[in-house]
Length: 70
Figure 1 (cartoon, rainbow, N blue to C red):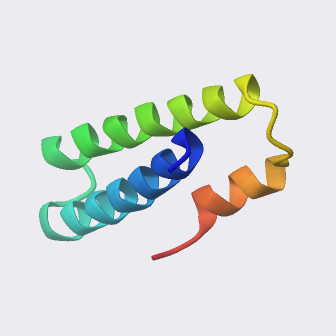
Figure 2 (cartoon, rainbow, N blue to C red):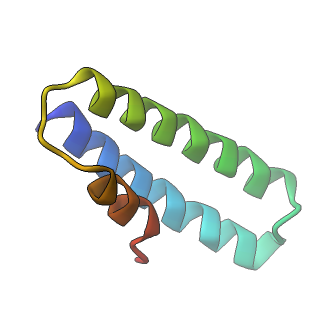
Figure 3 (cartoon, one colour):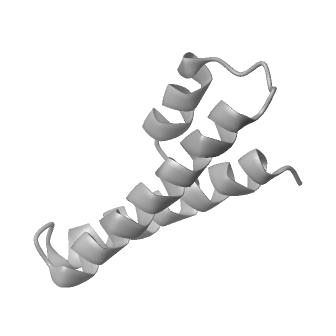
């Protein structure tokens, strides 16, 4: 699996985890905030991979990954 694909899946899972934690413990809980920061790190890494790769992905593809609901 390419690194970008791995990160896409990790982002999807982390987003689901963050939403679940937020629904149970609240959006301001320490656990939700930590999970959100982990998601931010994954998205930053994904963006770096896209910039550094020669893949023909567009910005819209990136936004689709970020905005797609589970």
